[in-house]
Image (cartoon, rainbow, N blue to C red; front, side, top):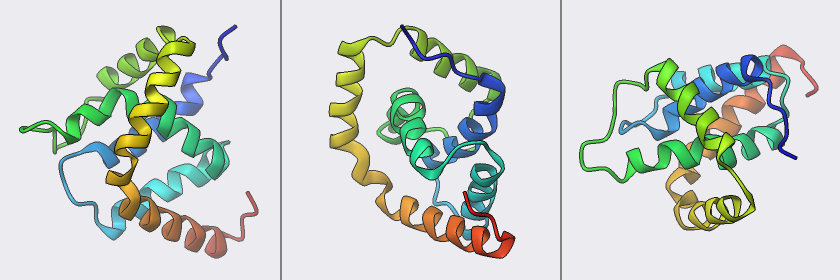
Length: 131
């Protein structure tokens, strides 16, 4: 049985994290914005890693290896529809495939992930949040 996902709770996380897959270099303000969206969400940082890996990455990774990748932002309706469609089609074989591709391509985000974690920790300290 597939996990029921609350799309309304996920949308802000999906939209903000989709910036990782734009063909641009993110700025400090981008990382702070994304970190704020994560903090405002009901998800822990560990849950967000799973969201990136199994929900966003399978849909948006091709943009980073495209010659003419998207750089202005993904259209929200398309993004939500594409992620939900991908999740609906997911089975154990496809999940295994995502794990394999994640292993191959996750290094493309190491610097961004470190910057996001730093912004996340700084915002958590500033807001006094414990989650």
